Image (cartoon, rainbow, N blue to C red; front, top):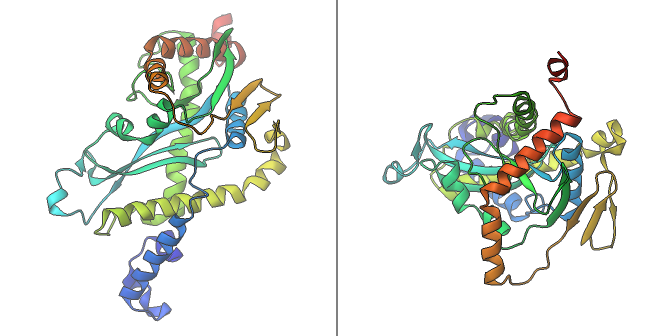
Length: 321
């Protein structure tokens, strides 16, 4: 099963030296995939400890309060049923689209797969449970300060197709001054984490490079989830090596045993876990209004571009000239 995932070959190519039939090899792959997906420890929402590690890593790169990067990935589906062809056909052919979020260490924290290929990133975002968790106040609150202004909501780095929400930070289509150019350089370089995660995921599991040959869409989604879980296990196994190279990467302490409140001394970030209870409807409406605030989105972007220009200038020599 691991050989099928890693090399992307067909089951009939392994029956000669494994001495198993094609149907038995396919059954072994199916059982292995569903067994891995059943344990979702490595495909969970980030805890307070994980969020603190993400915030510390992104703050070092000039983006305090950043959870990571978000983007969508298209997987071609070769054996898509003819009755579903129009629904699953997009600009890249027939296939499924998955939404993912990852951090600087390429750990994929959010996966929403099984979307038809005819949908774009905005349609998938409207169906995604990520927005539902934000609206229901299920995401932990993050308090940080940029350019003298205080914020209490984290954000993800995104490309230009995503809407102007306060939880997304997109760049400028035409950076017409040095502040915007400096901001775009850092935003694009940090947003490449999700693109790198897509490349590493396909390099490790070649079955994702080839068009899906399964007939069941749920089985196709389970294969993708299995590859993401195995990818996260490899990332966790490489943490010790990363700590040896940069021992200050793990700079956080617990305020209590359960991890409800975790404070970072290095960057003055506060992560507070939301209580697990029903959110009142009025609170949900207030949260929706705060997330869909375009003024807050643009204010955060302006504060961050000045913060980056003061602390991480790439065009300092041009300014002096």
